[in-house]
Length: 154
Ligand SMILES: [Zn+2]
Image (cartoon, rainbow, N blue to C red):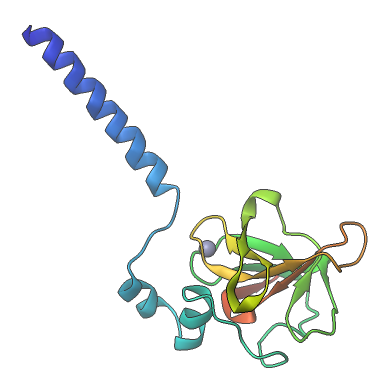
């Protein structure tokens, strides 16, 4: 009887360990912790699903070679090789650096149906994806500069 209890106890402990490991693969912070790490604009856009005004962000007109990362967790999201001039005033890409780098979700806010783009690692709001982009994907990832940092690489 004692042995059975001991076994089930260790099993639940192992399951608990697994759960913890799965949780730690996502970056999770409290609102206060994010605020500490981000500027007010970055916080508003990335954590509160805001949108920066067109043509005001840091990267819509950036043509340097490099990698765009999540401002919240540093996850690599987009590459300059897949960036294009959409004329929208927001940095635009025809695909993410890796399909697993971002998640998408239906967004029904503001009386529209759009597809929201989120960082797969920390759920930061990045922007939206539309189907009016250039070949080869036909997609336009319309992303807020405030959700990004840029690593210049030649
Ligand atoms: Zn992130």
